[in-house]
Structure formats: structure tokens, C-alpha cells
Image (cartoon, rainbow, N blue to C red; front, side, top):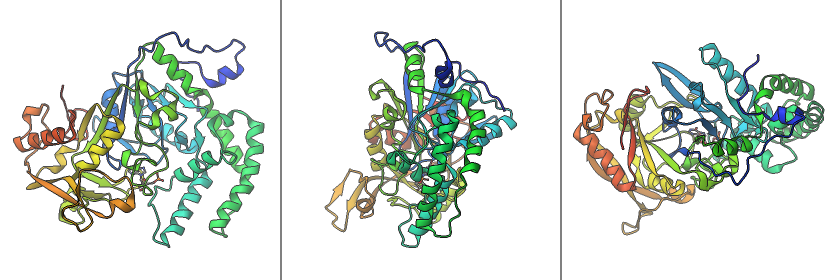
Length: 462
Ligand code: IMP
């Protein structure tokens, strides 16, 4: 399969070209606009829809973290698409889709995703993949699953997506044991490196499970060289690409995968993923300085969900949680697992908005709450058993967070079909009150309200 490379010069041509590649002059000012879209809870907030809405006014959509653990679903004209690695801008033909160096990339999964989209009539064009993104290989997924099983036996499992994310980032930090996308371009280097790694990684797998099969280096190298055929036209130094675009006045949209409370540094550690999912991951994961990220849109659901293990203060393991799961179809895009559901935790949301420096909010899945008589919103935590020990602070630490009890304020519920509302004023009064309560508490405007999965089921404000 041949696909068209991004309109900018690609990495391969920079290796083979006899003319020197241009680097942008730093005396040229950055005139391009930049926006980041980031989840403020434990993922699955509906970021894909927000990205899709904003992509039309941006020239590139840029992934900076995570890998195929992310699952962004987008509904266009009633058709549902689930994306795991390809940036959500892919549905806009003039938008460049960039996979930055901070992503861990499963090359086989990416090709599967490209082909899957093509079968449904979506041609993946204008894709740029960082030569410095690290590869997720089959043995990473195996290691992820084996570790999870081993930890589960001791009650320590994280509940990962088993997409090899943790092991791939571990190898990145280990340095000697990782492969990067750019390595696909050098056949001899790749063969030698895989031969060494296969032995090392077989030993590593067998230290977890002695019955693990040996990794066959030739088979893996051949598969990687096959994948390279497809991917080579898209591989480049995306830091130069992005800086070049910014200096030409082009606008960039950064797409956070996973979400802030799963951030390896700022989330509910150790029940987190292995990357910086907050906007703090953008500079390291793309090469664009943080100071250039001007607008930060924090995305939250009208309630809370979590997949996998870890503390979840407002979880409702009862009829309310079941109703939310039913009405919100709360099952994982990546793994199909039923999501844990609960009330909106504004202590957590305000913390996440602070860490990200959000400039506005998008409130998603408001329609799901329709029909619930009384809505609870968590605004403070009680620490331990002492009723005097009240805090408005979130604890990004699983152990400390497990020791708090959420304190709620009650708001009236709303009824009827809100999915047809296209302006704030068309929403029932209690729904408007709910929205204004969130804005007041967090101290930020809600500029996008989603009342259904389709692009059209959206209220824009301000
Ligand atoms: P990992 O990223 O597969 O290592 O999983 C670590 C934790 O993050 C698990 O609890 C996953 O369920 C969770 N997780 C990772 N990515 C997402 C996501 O995109 N949405 C929701 N949860 C996620």
C-alpha cells in the first residue's frame, strides 16, 4: 500500500536529498496559533469530538503522548469511528496529522488503523510521524499482560489496557533496549539491533513467565521492514515540521491522549499510565515550547468515569452508577471493559484545570444525566474520620486519595430530551444551573457543551 506523505519535506528525503534541508530562522516570529485539548478526569471525556470540532480551524492536529491505549471515538453523519493512534484531525482532508516523538507507536496497529479507515472511505493523507517516537513491539504487549497477571496475583495490578505502553516507555528510559521509528529506515542497523534485543527480551519475558516463547528475530525484523515500506514516506523530524509551520502562521491543535488524572507525574500514581498526558507533555513530546501553547481547552464529562484500578472518590457502585453506564454507553473504546461511573468530582476537575493552565472548558455528555432526579457534585473532601478535616485540594496519590470521603452539594436534575438543544437558552433551567455551577466553582467558562455524540449535537458559547 502506498500513501501520500505530508506536504512538508519528510525525514527520508532529508536523509537522501543532496540539497540541505531548511531550518526555520529563529528571527522569524511565531505567528501561528496553538490550542491544546486535554482531558481533566480519568480519560474517555469525549476529547475526540472536541478535537474534531476544532480541527477545522487548525492546520495540524498533533498527538504528543501515549499510544494505542487511547481510544477517541468520533461520530460523523451517524458513522462511529474509533481512533487509537491516528490524530483525530484525519477526517479533515486539509489538516496535517502529526504523531510526535512523545508517542509510543505500535507500527502494526497504526497500519491496521490506516487500512481500516480506508476501507470505510477515509483516506489517510498528510500524516507525519516523528522519527524519534519509540516503537511498541509485540513483546511489549506480552510483557504488559504478563506483568498485569503477576501483579494481580498479589492484588497490585494497575488494570492496564495491555497495549504495551508501560514496557515501551520503560525501554525508552532504559535507552539501550528501545527502538525508534527512525530505526526502521536503516535495514542493517535494524536487523542487528533486533537480533540483540530478541535475546535480551526473551530472557526478560522468561523472568516473568519461564514458559514464554522465544522471540524470533528474523520474523520480527521482516515484519518491521514490511511495515517500514508503508510508513517510510511519513517519517520525519516533526519538531522541525511544527516549528516551520508555526513560523508560517499555521495553527496547531495538540491532542492529549488519556487524561490528566492518569498523568504519570500528576495523576493518581501508581494507577496512571506511563506518559505525561496533561499539557505538560507537549514540550517534551513535540519539541514545541510550553510557552507557545496559548489556549488550553479542558474537557470533562458531566459526571465521572474510570477504567481499570485506582481510587475513585465519587464512584457510585449502585443503581445511579448503572443508570449512568447505561445512558452513557460507558464501555471502553479500546478494551470494551465496562467503565466505573460516578458523580462529577469538581475537586479533581479544578486541580486538573490548574495543572494544565486551562483557558476554557468543554462539558461533554450532558444528555446522559437527563432523568436523574437529583444531581450530586463533589466540592470538598473529608480526610479520614475527622469531620473537621475538610479540604478543597485533590491528592494526586492513590494511597492518600483512598483515605478521603467526598462531600457533595445537591442540584436539581433535569428531564426530557436535551439532545436537540443548539443554544444554551434551549436547555432546561436545571441543566443551565448545573453548567453555571461548574463554571463558578472551577472559575473558567464552558465554551463547548455536548448534548449527543454527533458533531451537530453541540452548543458553542462565547
Ligand atoms: P495503560 O496506559 O494501558 O498502561 O493503562 C494504565 C491505566 O490507564 C489503566 O487504568 C487504563 O485503564 C488507563 N487508561 C489508559 N488509557 C486510557 C484512556 O484513554 N482512557 C481511559 N483510561 C485509560
